Length: 462
Image (tube, rainbow, N blue to C red):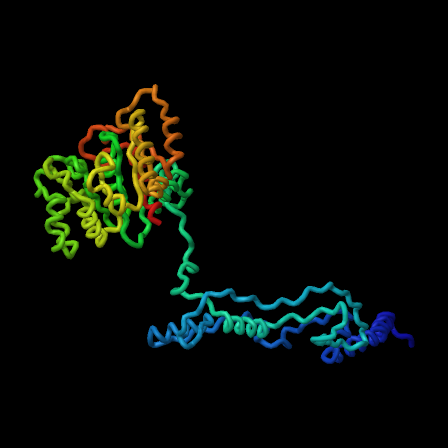
């Protein structure tokens, strides 16, 4: 009896599917031996067959806890590659691990399904052209890095602390930049302006450390052109910017008023008016700065030695006596200013010029003042002080505020060609009145000129 149609179709489907099922079963059995035989392409990695340490991300071992600071520091040094002996490493460049040479990629034909998939490693030498060199493993890179650290130690906090700190941009002061900095609480820092950078450079030049003691003489052939006011203004500026206080000596033979211009007439009269003559009488007994301070006057951090006020003995200071005072001062002060008074031929002048490291020649915009400044430089050059004349700083003070008939530019051009530097001090009532000179009462342009003079003086020392 014939079978139903449904049974025949089911049997046919079962019989027709047997070869396909058997082929799939055979492929699964061979999967363990030849993973690439199923598709003929790159093998599929089985996550279960890969070790756990290859799939999990590497973790840095936690540093062992130490019972003391020294042990913790030693452990930290070992983790950073420092020598375990505690030696201070030397700054050096650490070479990077060698990178394998790049090679052109090659396209490999897919393997046949019945060919076993094998992975061959190209030998280190004599590899076939076009073969891809093996990538260095993590262990190889770690070993290379450790060897490099052993050969070239890392920098440390002691020898190179700047490597661990980011450079901070200078803070702007004043102007729009300073206002933006203050409004944003420092988050917006445009840096200092060009003018502020110039001021910072002047301050750096003035405050340079000096090896030894130096002396600058301030002189002129004509009185009343700003010689003493320049000495006080520059002295106060040096005292403001330098770490060590300067000393100013009044060697004017004509009853100099250096201390009165720095302290004020009333304050000077209230103090014990010790002068350079008192210092000379006791110079042999002074063996400390404390003993010397009894003969000094102080205008802030500027220390001063007053000149002799008695006209009968004011011109009695000799070159030998000045050299004795200069030798005493040099043991306690690195910078000294000497107000020489008017003229270059009085008794102490040879001693002053002999011990001077550089000169300030005071001049004015009046025709007579400019001529005397040139005459002073000519006299110095022709009497054995050519180096002092060539390296002198000419300071033109607009004390009398000359009329527009005077060609100031022509005077400056003429004098600047026969000296190291020429600096002009603008007209300022704080200087022209001939009274107390204080930096706070001066115009900003005048204070700027005194800073330029102070920087030029220190430039002549180094």
